[in-house]
Every structure is written in C-alpha cells, then in structure tokens.
Length: 497
Ligand SMILES: Cc1ncc(COP(=O)(O)O)c(C=O)c1O
Image (cartoon, rainbow, N blue to C red; front, top):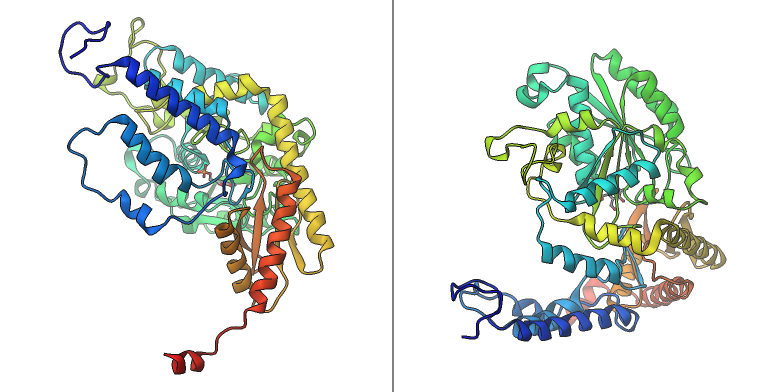
C-alpha cells in the first residue's frame, strides 16, 4: 500500500490511498460539470426517465466499495441527464433559480471544509453573520436585527409563525404549549399566498383553519379593508389576532401586497408583520424595482430565498428578524453538551442554533457569499430586471395571438395564459406535459380564476427572448395538434377490443 505523505501510520481511513489518482478523477468531474453548464442549452430542459434507468438504481445497499470512477460513470449515465432542468434557459416552471458555475465551485469548497454552522467560534459563522448584516441593509432593518440561513422560505415562514406566537403568548408557550393559554390565535394572509403559510400554522399547533385567507383586489393584492374587517370580527368573537403575512411576489401572479398599508394596520392592531418574499424580496437589488417594495422596511420579519432570484444553488433560504432578541428567545435552549465559553472553539455565543431549530447546519452562506461578491448586487439586480422584461415580452406575444388567452399579466416575472379551445382545462394541461416531453421549454400550470393556466415564471438568468418565443410557438403547435386529435368514442374502443 502506497502511503500518503500526510499519513502518520497505516491506520485505515476513508481518504484515498493514492491522492494523485483521486486528483485526476476530480479534475475529470470538475471539467465535465463545467462543460455541462457551458453547453446546457444544447440538451433538453427535461426528459422522461426511461424505465431501465429508473430501475438501474434499485439495487441492494452497497456493502462493498466501488471505484469512484465507476460511481461517477453511473452518475453521468443515470442522474445527470434526468435532473429537473432548472439550469436550462428553457425552464420556466414553478419558481426555480438557475444557479451559476461560481455557486457550484463554492459548494465544492464548502464541502471540503465540511463546517458545521450550528455553533462554535469559526470564520464560516462570521460569513453567515455578514450576509445577515447585508440583508439588514438591503431591507432597511435596524441594528440588532438577526438573520439565519434555512432550507427555504417554507422553513423561514414557519419560524416566523413561531416567533410571532411567542410574541403573542409570551415565551411560556414554548414550555406550556397552546392549551394552557386557552386563547385562540388567528393569522391573516391573502388567498394568493403560498400554501406553506397554512402548513406553518398547522406545524405550529395553531391550526391551519385559523389562518384567515383575505380576498384580493383585481391585481391579486390583499384587500386591506377586508383584512381590517376580519381582524375586528375575530376580536369580537374573543379570539386573538397575532400575525399578518404579506406577500412580495405571489406565486401565481407575482403580485405585491400593499406593504405600507399592511404595516400601518399591524402597528395599529399590534400584530406581527411577516413578509413572504420568497423570490420577490430580492427585487430590492434592482433600483428600478425597489420602490415597489416600499413598506418592507417596516416588517417584523422577512423570509426569502437566495436560491431563486439570487441564483445561488439550492438550498439557501433566509429569515431576517427585526428584533434579534425575540428571534433568539423563541429558539434558544441551554444544553450542557453545548456549553458556551469565552475563549476556545466553544466561544462565539450566541450561536446560529440559538436562532432556529437546526443544530447541524451546512455552510450555505459560502455559496451565497461567493455569488454576492463575484457578481455584485448590481448585476444580480439587472438579471432580476431582465426576468421581468421577459415576462412583459411574453405578455405582449400572448396579447397578439388570437389563439391565446391572457389570464394574468406580467406584474413582475410571471405570466399566465392558455390556448383557447373547447375543454380548455384538459387540453392546456396536456399541452404543458407535451412541452415537458419535447424538452425545449418547461412551463408549469396553475389555476387562475377557476381556469387551468399555463404559467411561465422567469427566474433563470440564462433565459432569453428567443426562449419566450419558443414557448409561444410550442404552445400554439401543441394546441393545434391536440385540438385536431378527435377523442376516440368509447363504443369504438369496445368494438375494437
Ligand atoms: C411566494 C412563495 N412563498 C414560499 C415559497 C416556498 O419557498 P421554498 O420552496 O423555498 O420553501 C415559494 C416557492 O416558490 C413561493 O413562491
């Protein structure tokens, strides 16, 4: 056995016996992945997984070792070609960021460090704290605000509900639970809000039924008069309103609630004002779009994702809280084995684990730090503006096509529309699946005003106007084809069978 220079003995470890071989393989993997990103446009956005490929990974738990090059060969054959496709410029579904090669490299560095950001005194935590400071500045929060990386905005929203719950019932709720207080809490958000807020109410033990879904105006923004009335009704009925969740960038339409008015109502009614800014909050990086977020600086907390418009590779959600003490007091819990010191590795209190549910935490901050420093918020903001331009281009194309019906205009980076035909809900769902299988563009679907809609959401910095044109072209083609295929009458099927 050839001993590595850094090894003291022949004591077995998982490090390679031959670092030169590993290095050569590592360079192949890195080059391949850079090639993959450089030529992303040449491949389909997505392709169906052949049965044989799906089955090929169903194998017994590996007891014995396999050479890295063989495992990598499996990755190239079975995983790489059949991923979600959100790095591809034709990806326009859901709300997925495109990632960057810089983010990929930073992920490699973070994995090399293998830092645990739950706590202790080390530089990776300082990087996370610094990003919290930057976020505080982007959103005009005061000193004393706190921030934490989380998986995504679903988690950030859940944590905000927990902080607001402790604010309403005092921190005793952490020990006593909800029954002891004998108070029914109520929260408010718009009908257009993301479903993770109802789930957060469920997970927080308050119950999703106590999330009041406030109607929206014609632009999909929360109707503030209706909010006022619902709060009043709940108070009259002896319940305790405690939280309003405003949305910056509604998932179906990109609508932005009137944050200034929501802040005023929350101030008057003493309600926690949380903002779900999953993708929309980072519009603060654009000088052009920032004025539309007016009022965000008055929120008590904001949840948002760097992995969406921030183009940081998954996952990189963030929660920012105006009052860091309230944030801390909702999650911190002493434990002898997590004892803090004033010097040594156990210094640096408070630790990130004091601000959230996770003790083991990866170095999400590094890929975010690299992305922010390498590109700068100005350029990232321009990418955000570009996404909104693409949405306006699509809206214009849809308006100009008699066969297409516009269901939701470009308020930010999202447009919903559909192919005009009979049985339009079914046909448009088929069109979306057809497009996915063809692999040129991949929108998603939703329901707007009871109608099934093709939903195009522009987040990926690689998407160009030609991709939008391809979407229109493909929808028209698939629609024409689908409406030509006459349904087969059931009795004919029976005779044939
Ligand atoms: C408005 C909004 N809120 C919350 C979420 C959930 O975010 P995540 O998927 O990062 O948990 C999304 C996801 O698209 C969203 O668009």
